Length: 239
Image 1 (tube, rainbow, N blue to C red):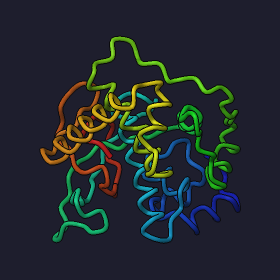
Image 2: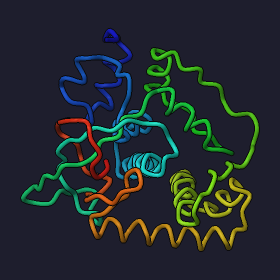
Image 3: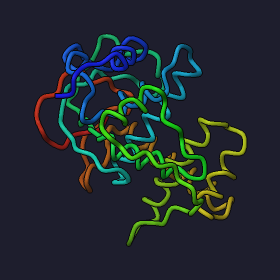
């Protein structure tokens, strides 16, 4: 177990809302869930900051679901929140078993560095975590388009492009399509159509309560579900 230090206490004081009491007492973790990483990478105090944090969380969840980032999963009970109301819970609260993604510092560092051409710089809290975990946080120097995985289907390619578009749109909405197209060396019109199809597919899945985990359809909740308790290792709808 990593000892608690002042940097960890500072992180929990300023942006530790997504960590349980037990997790706070344990100190720097070996891995974080998307919602935890997003809260430390993009601490927020207003609606604009919260939207940016949620966008990063959503991008990480999609990266996990599409196999774009190495991770492990456990199951837990999550309190549901409607997709069209990110600031409010369903009342009375409803709880469902969901899948929780756990990502190591090394995997997150590599994923962040790969967000070319504008790799996101680790926040002070995340930089401290990377240092404790001895991550070699080497910035990307070459602007090389991300290669498509072998035998990638058109739908998976569209999902991969949507992940990058979400990141670009959060940074600066204007020009997000053009920056994403440049990132993948793709035609802008083709990318717009692909992102539109991926958005519709994602919305349809959440409305139907279905997501795909390792190739199998499972019941799912919104990606904004909040985890309360880890239960057992398994594969269930994502968070």
